[in-house]
Image (cartoon, rainbow, N blue to C red; front, top):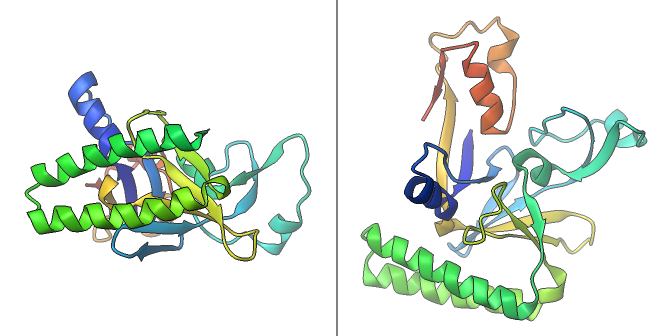
Length: 219
């Protein structure tokens, strides 16, 4: 499984806090994801009914789950928001433009630091201009989410709805993310143990499992 983490918030933790904490997690490939124009990712999500302690893994709910009525112990949530603890935030058009200018400047500096060519950096800037022109042109249609840490300089995920008006999807900037792979060493685990095949989507849940199974490999 690949988990997508915010680069900017991760650099903040390393530089300012000098901690081992990594960037905020925004999505994983357990959800339907596609690359758009080489600049962004679109991640399809859905509203689900959860009970306290539930973790969504990107699977489709059963008919019984879909039919389940809300009670005092359940609530309706967006599965990506819930799984990655995304935090709703708000912008007016002016404040969003200010944020985007600063965020793209930080990403450009990171691309240059990573050794990207002038042509690659220029292509990034042109793609960003086209992308955010569309966002600003339909500004009222978008909802905004930060990562769990609510870092004001980090990535802001954009939420909108497909043409059917009911299917939500997120938009994330590709160059603002790093891929973090979580795998199982299938050669040495006990495949009869249900814990080793338990599907979870948040890296914290994998970390909890490590306390019990040293055969998990995270890198």
